[in-house]
Length: 293
Image (spheres, rainbow, N blue to C red):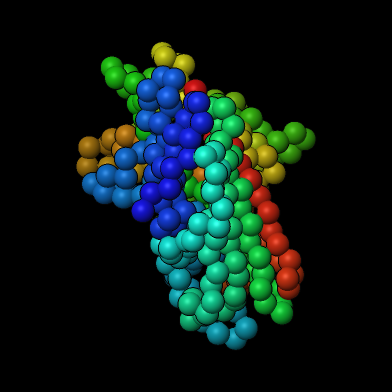
């Protein structure tokens, strides 16, 4: 079942499964901005990643003397959310764990995902409530996929990515090898790059200390700005085909509070690089914005 919110600029379709944005239609320019979810390339559109981001080393972790298995990006993207509140331009989804995942994630939690339209922008808010009597460890991330090219008679290479780093912080660059994280060091020149398939030949581009990324056509000036101030990490990814050296017709810009395991991970969840800690009864909050032009 799709939930629809809209204003004078945008119409947004959101699935209750995963509280996932499936379509963003711009009423003024007629463009569809989100990837179609064609499983020939990648069957998702904008999943929410929880309680891990990326892959665990050997797909398992240790906690409180137990071993738990969990697949890449966790399980929240596949659960059915309830609609908590809805207006014409806003909707809030809620999911409560209620013991359903205790065999792979030994915590009880409530997740709230809110979407709000303001002119040509979609604001996304997350809340994670720790419903345990102890500290809870988790990651959460976004994975929206944007169609490229957006306009007929344009090519992927007509698009570029523009970066706004966080003030007074070094941008760190990482790479993924066999889905595990390796630090490359400080990214000295991170202002912009042309979009091309070879960027993704070795998996995602991963950075820390970036505040916004804009995907823009150099011909039509249409694109998407993703604003995610204070998020510790961001990934940029497209599906790459080793056979023909081409990328899929989308690019993901993924703000993360969490990251894949480093290759030297101990697999102890409490020691995991980028993990978030939430005290008993407390609520974690974060938000990011997508502006469609």
